[in-house]
Image (tube, rainbow, N blue to C red; front, top):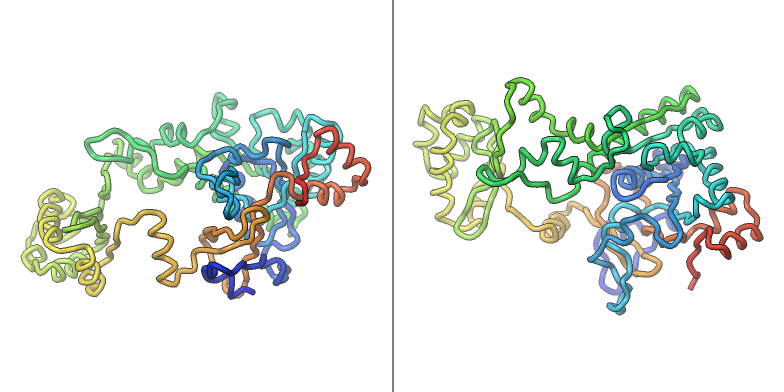
Amino acid sequence: MIGCQRRRPRADEVCPDVTDAEPTASLPLAGVRVADLSRVLAGPYATMLLADMGAEVVKVEQPGRGDDTRAWGPPWAAPAGDADTQGESAYFLSVNRNKRSLAVDLKDPEGLAAVQDLCASSDVVVQNFRPGVADRLGLGHADVSARNPAVVYCSVSGFGPEHAPDTRPGFDLIVQAESGLMATTGPVEGPPSKAGVAITDVLTGLNAAVGILGALMRARATGRGEHVSVSLINSTLSGLVNLTQQALTSGAEPPRMGNAHTTIVPYQAFPTADAELVLAVGNDSLYQRLCTALDRPDLAEDPRYATNPDRVAHREELVGQISDVLRTRSADHWMEVLTGAGVPVGRVRGVLDALRTAEVAGDDVLRTVDHPSLGPLEQVRTGFRMDGTPVPLTAPPLLGQHSRALLTELGLDKDAIDAMVERGAVQQPDPS
């Protein structure tokens, strides 16, 4: 069964969930329950990483609407042969696999009590409510930790609890602007540009997962929980790494460099006869190899380009000469020549091209899961690999797909659950 998951399936082949065929007890977070009260991207991305390591993640959603990203389309993934059905949004599908969905109205007293019990019985709670909302619902850190002192409680926000005003909403675009990321991204002579993906949310999700794992280790050893706070602004400022240190060291704003590097030359995109390549010549030895591969020994011998600081000082002249050579032949030609010479080089690819290319190269980046309404669904696997530990795969859930089962596990009887479903406090999809 695992072999089926480690490659793209045939067109007529459906892979079962790994969890149906392989025990998850060997996974690092087996036995850890996560109450996921977050939505959109940073929180759900963090909890998906935990789920990929074996944690049981219960995603709490609002009946009727669910996570905001369920409505963030197109594109939509529709059931096979049913193009007229809206289906599931690609955005939601990207960060919610390996989770169970509990669709319950937190304004309903019994629904709220069930979620409070869920949090109290969980090892980890993740939430990104607006400031004050979790406390008002009895789902804040103080209330949850009073019932479960060992809980690892993670609050995700845009600007953090100490950032005034603390009620400021956090959206990736706003934080890309406020963090300096936009100012350092884009063409040299053009306007500031945002990154193509909501990178501030992704960085925040990674930071949240790291903080949770560290706190969870201590909680398991000492029984003492932790309140982990992560924000988009702090995650992005720390994620700018050398640029923030460059600004602090120089006292000046880092320049916008387009596809070039502030402190390494040549390290940028170059045109060829038919497409663009990128070169990453990170040291003097690689530069010598580049000059040999380009059949330009004069560039290797020129004292203006002898060291990287020299090349940075004479960036414009050197980049122009390299560009002139690369324009004479095709991208395929230069890929072969430069790769053979040991010069770091790559093609500028589209996303779909990059995925398929990685698969052909044996990178095993894709997984296929059987979705309850969509059928076979391709997904990109987590960035880390664990040798000998099969990654579980269950499809991103339908809204409320596991509501009855989860409420039963929390101790509610069938009559109580039926009454909640009847009054709209709980959503459970029709099994058909």
